[in-house]
Image (cartoon, rainbow, N blue to C red):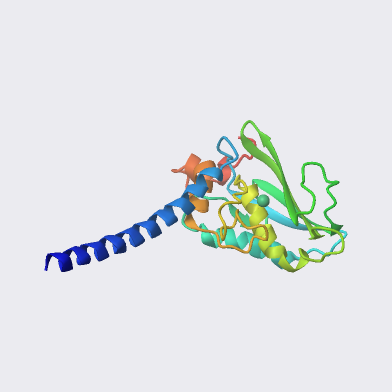
Length: 216
Ligand SMILES: [Zn+2]
């Protein structure tokens, strides 16, 4: 009887270990988020307008829009920046440049043989400008990027919002080179922590617009 009870306890203990291992595996993935932040202060950006620009390759306007919408819907309910592709009144305009050929490393500040690159201007710890470049292919003779524009741009827009690459975090948007992974709540929380949007700066202002000032 005692042996049977011990066996039952052992079985329970091992079930618990499996359970907690899973929980800790989740925590380990969450721990990746510690690497996400790359800007040091609030960005004061509420609306980010995305423009698709042809630069030797035809621009995929829907890829740009869908990438922005992926962040808008994944991070809905937070005071995160809102991406838009039309209209005026944006605090920051980001060009998404569709560049022909392969990424030969000649673009300053961009690593060669990658499908995408984000160039950020940071002034006083705040994002003051950003430009996204996507190439048709990462290396000569390949056509591996143009079929994944949307996912690549989604990843690059994580950089626009101040997130770093997180190569250890597979299946996460910042941990996957092609950006095919999902955006999860931790990425949204991290951005929320980085950015001070107008809603947060002026919580009692019903429409924010009279206070809108990108330089503030
Ligand atoms: Zn990246």
